[in-house]
Length: 535
Image 1 (cartoon, rainbow, N blue to C red):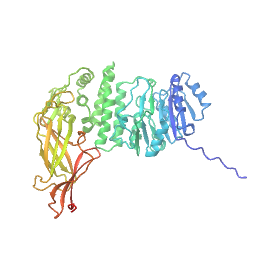
Image 2 (image 1 turned 135 degrees about the horizontal axis):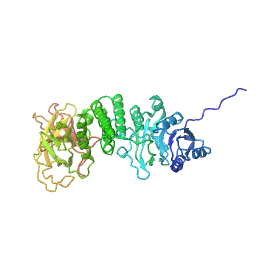
Image 3 (image 1 turned 30 degrees about the vertical axis):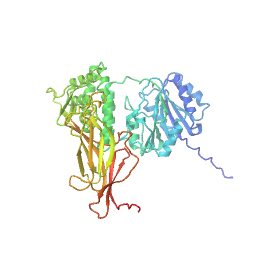
Image 4 (image 1 turned 135 degrees about the vertical axis):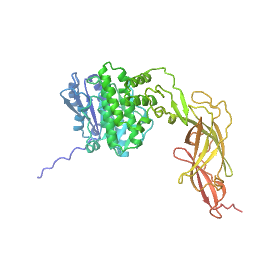
């Protein structure tokens, strides 16, 4: 009789890679949350790595593993300087189709693995971010968890702003991209791993409906983290971004994250708290080098202006002035800097603005792009070929002096545009977000679609409706319609006859109002045969 071998055991759906280091008091609650997963023990593998613990962690893991076949324990003889070695050891033993990395201070919501695996399979996602919640007072990221997303692009969404490894990763992605946690960093070893996974993934999903990962307070690092360690991490991450992301707005956006977070902390509060003059000198010199070799104009333009001023000083070698700028940013109660409006631009009169001792360019202080438009479309009505629009629009941070606002219609295919001046009436009840008057911010205009600037009706096609908001010489063009009163009709798409079609005999020219996916108003101009009335 021929012997037959047993079929191989099916692969688990998810592996929890659990790093434990002297956390016996937290380990039991963590394990209980893993054993309670609705995904089930048959579909779950737990790889618990004892990272050189000196408390009762080892014996506790061995005792639990004796009764739990899904729990595999791995012991490292001595504590690693960072969690990197423990997590790499867990990867070596991972059998699940997906893997998530936790610390013993963390827990999972009962259905977390089931929901994350389902999302990964449904969306064919290589990475799934499950919404975190805090256990105790630990802060957790929120910006990328405002809503769920089947496909969140790392270059344009907020997912890149969370680089901790408590996500669900497709194991095949880790093998294919040869991803592991770097062991040569003293701090932040999770960032290169998670960032590389995002950038190598075919799809990234976000689950934001309810918490998946419950975050506790991690074990303290093996050695104190100094500001120079943060500069090393910033340089590593920015170099990675340069190597993996093509030049352009996406690269600038990712670079700005590391400039603001890692390098910002290194040259800010961490530097000010450092007692060693040699550590401070090393931090500032290294930061100067990073700025001059890895920062791009586009990435610097995305930063808060006080930080951009600090970096301009650092890059120019003005270390003492950069430290003073860091002290300015760390101080509480600073009055808001005055605004200087010149040549259609707005500048923040921060320290060192037009200071001849340092000669920083005005562009470092330029906040024109930060001017927020407050607006609302309040009336939209038709009178034959005339479209009447009314509402308000103004800059939140500027007065409503020297108004030159226009309604703009732009042909989406050709770029042709028509501009219509607006009239205004004073409204002393109109105020900005701080209650300051913006009395001349109302607008009203009458758009004659039957006669453009060249005397002809508007050409057939889609015309986007925009508002060119202009006060104090500062101009911003914004789509009209997303902010609107409840009385503005956005449902009916009745055609409005503009008159005979000038280029096709016997046809009518009609306009139909519609809205884009972002609720921006547009007009569809087209020709048609007249509709004959009965009788």
